[in-house]
Image 1: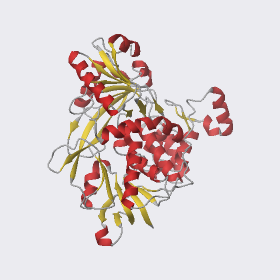
Image 2: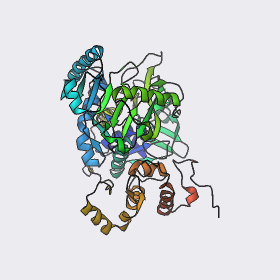
Image 3: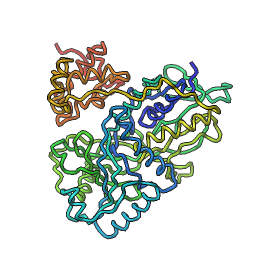
Image 4: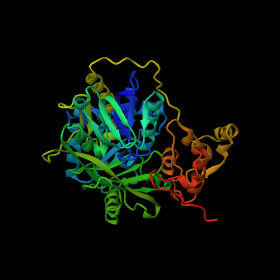
Length: 487
């Protein structure tokens, strides 16, 4: 088959592009080298939907951030992923901070951010009783929110699949033959088979520079910026209700403290530049930095309640001469027609993702040279997995009566039932490993971090996928959970 569009990368950006393009009658495929969607930057970030006051006016970052943030409430309802409009606060601790906050306020107004205002110390304390006594005021952005980034990515990707997009996982693109050599189309060479496409969208995240170089397109460099986080259990959920920022610096928005959509408290990230695009280990130094800086916002954060720490990598774009790009790279290449780069999508990429999907779809249509026919069969709504934990007592009884597997508790920390795990495996874009189940259902994300439930989840994956238990992996590849029988 010759595809109209091939999208390289199945993170939040690639998945939003795929869903948007599936609104037209096109043959589309999405390719990723990982065994599941959201395995790169999309699974390890702050989960913040930013108001849009931080980006420089006139940039794509600013425009698409504001547009994307406005799209999330409706999309969360349509695609059944968790989103909360909790608002954000940039907290000032001195006169200098408040002067910077005034500049952010004006920048937000220039970007068209609504419901943005500067509040004094008294109002700040009413909104956030646990805030440091040193805080003197803040910038309140009421349109900001929080989301589960991997859950959202799965929802967008699965809805694209429902609308005809072919999804090829564990398919790393090793080289690309350009149209000048084929006559008409791009040929993507993977480890399994070749994929022929009229238009290629490069949404490969940290490796977008490598993909661009394969076709001789724009020369840029992607460097990873590592950010470390820690996560507190849901006993600490009352520490903050808004996303709490400190005033930003040249490396980013700084250390934040935020609730998650699941009731935990998340703090981070650090910001350290490097060259290793796989360096997601955490360090004692990095964790200490997060704690010390986050306690400036909320004092006496209980370290004993940390249940996990992790690191994510942001894709920072530089020009070939080493100068910073300072904006998203979203464009059809001047030299290689039909090749569209969507690169350097660092923060606020998650916030902008739905709007990036629409923007790239318009670029694809322009590159094709024709008006796309609307897909009249487009399915806008996706049904997710119903949460047993969040159901009323009456609904819980009804669920168990309809499906007895709802009566079998697998993950006690997060109250996840066998029915939810089976649904995650059997869904159109189903989980095939423990991390996939974890991202879709939260089984294993509680205080014990899968210490008790992983054996049962392994059994369920083995049974539902009809594979031996020794073939079940943590996250694909050779990450096998078991090596064999002991008796």
